[in-house]
Length: 134
Image (cartoon, rainbow, N blue to C red):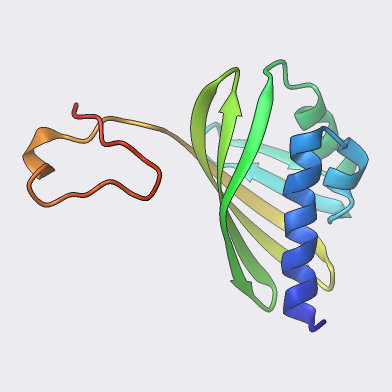
């Protein structure tokens, strides 16, 4: 298995561990001094233990569905749906690696919204999705 295939497999395991609530396996991917940024809230979490603590303390029932993982060399992107207490949030995770560990992750979140009617004539639903008009 080449380096990029190993990296993708490690990211897949990260998301699978997130889904099953295995905090140790979920965070094994991160360097001890990794940084996690949430640009929308302005928060930065420094260190694997701190990243694990903020995720482990989340009060919602969470589920993770990976839509796509793509990357090359040291930069990888995961597109996911993270469901919090039954409400989906779309997430993009950008992971920067040094060797086999994440040294910096930036995670963006976006809520679903209805499609505006003015685009109805030119839009089609994404696979597995319904277009709800706003």
